[in-house]
View 1 (cartoon, rainbow, N blue to C red):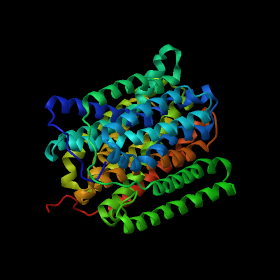
View 2: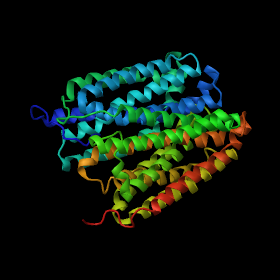
View 3: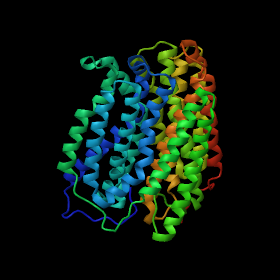
View 4: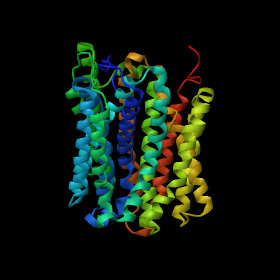
Length: 476
């Protein structure tokens, strides 16, 4: 994810070598996306095993998003400076190490810290994926390759809980929930070996300067906001929490001011503030923030309510996600790809409304004790269809009017918004859900306020989509 000119490989690569390199970065991409949601199915087991409370459960889910979203922009710049293959490999190695720390955690605090490191490692790895693909293929060839990221990225996020449930049910070597993290050891080592064997050595040919100060300011601001949103409802909003909330907003405003001044002085900063002057980019970022928050929070409370509310096993919870995943695949690969150029913002609005209506209906049926009957399954598939109608089209809409010279910066900010939105959704929807109390009955009752927060966030996405141009992909 870089907007600078990058050097081409020293020698032309064969089609076989390019295919193997592409497969390597694609596998790492799926691993990074799936680990954001794979923990959802395991949270009840983690709660029992480590004695984690409701706040700790939210932090375990949100810490990964926070670490990943806060450092993505720095990760992309490090690839520009030190080389994409090198940073990709370093990111994989750190991701494996952090995953092992997650699997070996002895208490909730250790697991939260390890999840934060896991997300930070993903931030070193993820930006290099798109940069490598950009340099491996011509613009025309990239179209088909990038479609894989849209389909597999959406499926990886949805099927993460499925993989988590299957691993817990298998109880490999008696590891229980720890297997969802330790499985990254063999997978990561294989990806690391493939990276050094198949991915060519590439780096930017331009002189790049890293805005470490700006990145740290934004990270501190996001962390303060997240802490306030998670801790506030549970603790009754004491003054330290309110101070953290105010401080978070102040830090983000300071970071924006710092970025503007740095752009004026040296021409680059941790974010490209000029892009927010484009209506498609600004309102698209708002929409994807709200959508990412809604989807991350929704999947969290759905998985927890099935196990702690209805007493389903991890395997049954995993299988319950399958109709949703199939719907997402159809929404991305069929409806979104085919109808976005024709319908423009209408497709986004329709997807949000379908997701809100069907998704809320599913939560209400689960709260009434119906989770695996045909109607709930059908509604869940329809909700997945709505999610796919948003997840697939939003990225191309956001970058529709971005100049090619700023493509890397725009892509990095897009992915950052997705991760920060995911962390905020876990905090907001999780807070509404967990305030209903503890116990099976409370876990089902919490679906009403949690579902209301979910619908509210999608309402924000709809309002943002309404501000987009009616025709986004008109012929230039």
